Length: 80
Image 1 (spheres, one colour):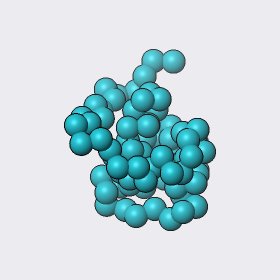
Image 2: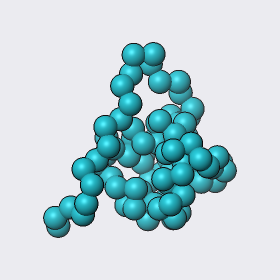
Image 3: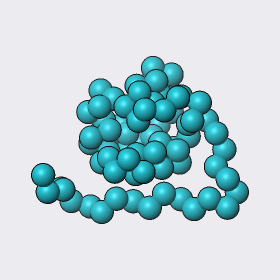
Image 4: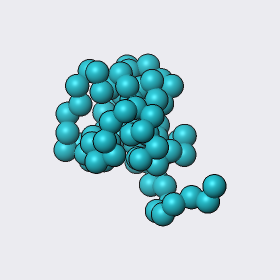
């Protein structure tokens, strides 16, 4: 699950902070989910899925055996 949350967030070019705001959760909680330190409730998964415009089932798929882990976004604030 952590792998997919991070993959989807990175694919959409969202920072953890932006995803957290969109989902109405703390940024540290998003970080913990992506690291596998926290097990989110179904409510949190539903909010994350809505913020990422995917179905909750997307988080539960097994990654392909040859899938590379998501590349992290560049650190620092983006220019607006």
